[in-house]
Image (tube, rainbow, N blue to C red; front, side, top):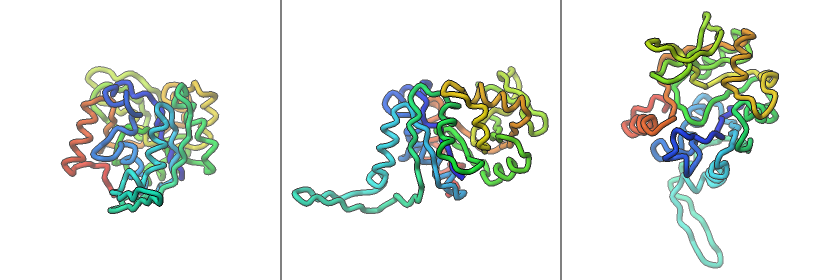
Length: 257
C-alpha cells in the first residue's frame, strides 16, 4: 500500500524555520520530521512513498537524491580520479520514494488528486508532512475495511485551537469550530483512503479538509479511528520544541523502530 505525504504547504506559522526550508525538512533531532514520519510507516512495512511537493520542493528532492551523503560520514579523494568512501553508513532504508511536484498554488485536495495517477491499488495511506503519532496503522486499515466507507481518519484529542469533529458512533457527521470548554476529537491525519476519493477532488483548488472531507462525511462515507494516545503536530516553535525535547530525552512515542 502506498503512503502519500502532503509536503507542499508554506508553513507560515513556523516562519522562523520555513523561510529557509519546507516544513517537512524542519529537523527533529538530527533528521527532518519527514524522515521520522517515513520511518514510522516503514516500521509497519509500508515503504513506498509518494511525496506531494510544492514550496521549496527542490530541497526535498535534493535530500533524497543525496540521501547516502546526508546520512553517512565520508572521505573524499580529490584530484584527477576523485573518489568518495562512505563510513558508518546509516542509509539502511529500503524505501521507494516518488517525488511529485504538485506546484506551489495547488491545494491539499488537488495534491491528493495528482497523486492518484501513481497509485495502482484501491486503497492508500495518507498523512501530512508535519505531524507525528503512534497510532497502530494496521489496526486503522483493518477498521477501514470493516466499515466499508470511503475514508478513515485518525481522530485525536489535542489541546486548544483546532476544529472539532461531530461523531455518531464511528461515523463523522460534520466538522465544526471547537466550542469553549469541550475537549473533543479533531482530525489528526493518518488516513486510510479509497481511491474513489477522486470523485470528491475535482481540481487543484479543492481543499481536502474543507471541501472534500465534509462532502464525504455528508454522504456517510467518512469514519473515525479514535486514538487517545500520542499525537503532536508541528505548527509553531513551541510544538517544534516539544518534539525535539521528546527525541532528545529518548521519550519519543512515535519511535517504534
